[in-house]
Amino acid sequence: MLDDTLLDDPAALQRADRDRALLALAGAGARVRTALRQAEAAGLDRLRPDGRPRAVLVAGHGSALTAAEMLSALAGTASLITSLPPTEAAAPRTDRAGAPPAFTAGLGWQLPGWAGPLDLLVISSADGGEQGLVGLAEQAYARGCAIVVTAPAGSALAEAALQVRALPLPFVASVPAEDLTPVRAAEPDLPAEDPAALWSHLTPLLALAQKIGLTQLPYDALPAVADLLDATAVRCRPDAAAYTNPAKGLAARLAGTVPLLWAEGPIAGAAATRFAAQLADRAGRPALAGPLPQVLTAHRGMFTGQLGAGVDPDDFFRDRVEEPDPLHLQVLLLRHAPGAPGAAAEDEQDGPAEVPEEDAGPRSFGVARAHRLAAAHDVRLTEYASTRPDALHALADLVALTDFAAVYLGLAAAQS
Figure 1 (cartoon, rainbow, N blue to C red):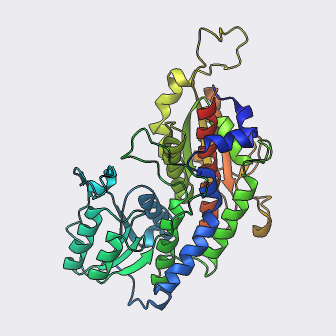
Figure 2 (cartoon, rainbow, N blue to C red):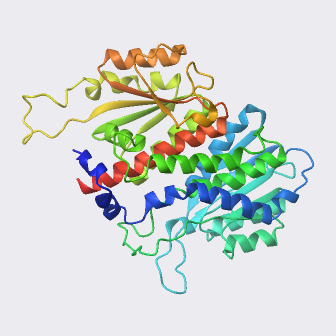
Figure 3 (cartoon, one colour):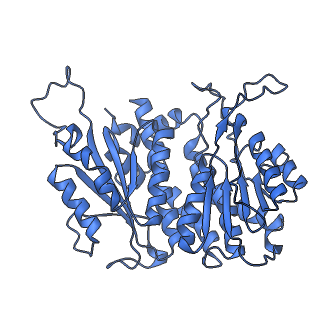
């Protein structure tokens, strides 16, 4: 069971946060600004596209593919945006220093057979050492595709970008903490991903999409995202008490549960998928994510099984020595509800708000049915909604909150 008093102990959180995940998230806004500035310096502002591409293919792994899903949610159905995950894995070669290579160094990618001169390939990598991505760039060059590469300067992928006449954009890495001591991972070739790397993938991708007309974002949408991330970092800082820190409150609520992450709409859907990945990577917790309305039929069996039996974890007569704390379901419903009644002005909003159960605001039939399903099986349902009118800002709100919550849950569980 999680000792939630640890969430109100900043010193304990700092000791547990050995890879400085909280510091990385706190610097996400700065990384967005740096990525925008470096993308302009790399020539993105001078790009003069001749129409929109037929399709945009985004290749990478981890949060690079999450960024592609978010771009697809923001672009809507007017553009074809396809993720290219790795399709094969081979044993990576050991470098000259003899260090164990990362598993991702041996991944391979394959360009779809239909890709050609009318299409744009975007390759994004936080490491830049994946030979499979280098080979993918060469495939795309041979097919006549336009190519954009986001990778660390000086990496093998960045060098390959010049050879295939791609537009090279720099990947902004986090600044390592001065007091950070290397910690040997349980699986050295499968290290945890930097939790703020998403913004280093997403920012140049969105700047590019804005330039070629894939999205209809306002001209100042991306700089405003940096401000929103800064504001969330202040609200969710480690020394903020749990009753005022929404991320700590959400982490405590998910402790000891099997989270079902439900989403209404593509924006909330992308945030829910990201949250499930972060709970697995940062908190070591499984979670099931899915969009309404189809998730109601997909997860129905969870409610009619043992987890949905409505077991009371505070049962006075339960033997707390012999019986472990029972797992129970927790539904977290994420929504983007622009223009909801009672919504504050854009510059007065403090991020996603928990929607009270007795809220009398309008609900879609899918959301109303979700509430009835949870209530019928004594399963707690918590709803968070962002009422910001801009879709990108709503996405940033939901992702920033849930990223912090996943990290806090992992840190508190590690200390329990």
